[in-house]
Image 1 (spheres, rainbow, N blue to C red):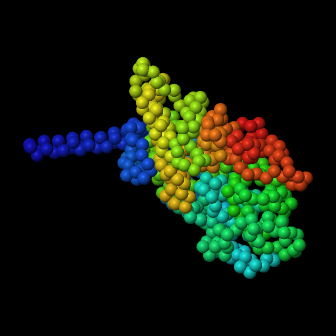
Image 2 (tube, rainbow, N blue to C red):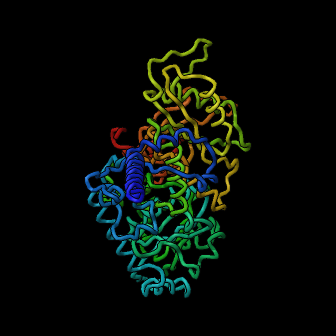
Amino acid sequence: MAFYKASVLSLLLSGIFLLGIRWNSFLHDQGILSGISRDLPSDSLKNLGKAKLFDVKPPNATVNYEEYGSHQPVVQKDELLGGLLPSGIDEKSCLSRHESVLYHKELRYKPSSYLISRLRNYEALHKQCEPHTELYNRSVEFIKSGQYNGSADCSYLVWISYSGLGNRMLTLASGFLYALLTNRVLLVDPGFNMAGLFCEPFPGVSWLIPPDFPLINQFSTFNQKSPHSYGYMVKNDIIGNSSILPPFIYLHLAHDYDDQDKLFFCDQEQSFLRKIPWLVMKTDNYFVPSLFLIPTFEQELGNLFPEKETVFYFLSRYLFHPTNSVWGLVKRYYQAYLAQADEKLGIQIRVLETGTGPYKYVLDQILNCTMTENLLPQINQSSEPTILNQSTKQRKTIAVLITSLSPGYSEEFRKMYWENPTVTGEIVSVYQPSQEEHQHSENLLHERKALAEMYLLSLSDKLVTSGWSTFGYVAQSLGGLKPWVLYKPDQNRTAPNPPCGKATSLEPCFHAPPYYDCKKKTATDTSKIVPHVRHCEDVSWGLKLFDQNGEL
């Protein structure tokens, strides 16, 4: 009898235990247990690997509970982004390629069928001409011998890794678009960190230049005065006096380029450059807007991007997939601190000062912007308590994600919302992933954190960025967000009035465009040539792509 009772009791306890497991799993999938993560303290990314996280259903995941038995729920997703991305790439090798769609908002715009077709054609071309194929080896021989017979099966654009991470992403996208327009294969200088930051974007091939490429040791020495520089050749009339085509030409398109270098953006020069099998490019400019001013490319660009200001929006989602190490930083931070908030506000702060800050005039500008534009709730600084009719569960939660080299700005925001209640009862939490104080572009861990923060900002519902900042340009375009742009402060260190303005385009700004009419051969305002290329909101002399009516 005792044995029988023991058996019944054992079965009963086992049933309760199994029921508890299923109930706990259900709560996880409903996002209930994950709400506990709201109360986790803000910390730096270095502690994320130690955090024990609850399961959080990504914001854009559609869960099919009918198929949910003892297994995880099936997540419905358009991981190929409407055909923008190629299929057949191993998921484990690059998780972000397959999972980012679960965190980003749905595509606001659909890629054109023509863009999708051209990308598939480019991938086939890259496979045919990739490093160490017979066609590639044949083209490399032109460089080694210094002789070119005028006929090449494959033509290439070599991108030199140069400047900070935001600049590199913008220029790499610019280079890829130029390669697409001219039927060239893009090869990427890995520099210090590119392989540790981004997955390979093309299926089954590499876009990285192999270490035995004959010019790789000269990349750091190329400049305007290099004999192989196109501007130098034009200036010294080397091209006009020779019937022999060089096997490669260096294109200097950095911020300090001169009038001869800028001839790259003229149709006549493009006709000549098309004959050269190897073009080697160094730039820190997002030069896409000026490609739209070259008549030869006009029709093709119109077919690729019917909505003009979606260029970097699509190219960034196509090219830049963070490695698993970077993606882990993004997911862990998002799930720990941001996932359960009703609203997420990103604030990207870039101060063009030699010190680390924080600076009061910058803080005043950000507060003025966020309060005036109703991006953050007003605080009650009176001695009278705020009486609310809402329960804690009914009160809106706002997560503020601040990225800055200085920890001081987030500390001031956190202090303000800790010491003062909001007038309308919102619960505001302030987070800052890293606090590096200084930029270290050659440090892989530093750049992994920077890339993770760009992606975290792009997951915001609303975004505030610093004018002139390429970091902010990347974040806004990845997320398809039109940010509130903080205008550059006055030279006397006073906050501008107004402090910020809403951007009317998703696109980054070309900071150093040419002002030259190639047909008339005279200086001109290149923002007046076509309606969709106009001056930027944050850099008055820069160029930027807009839809023709200025709004999307």
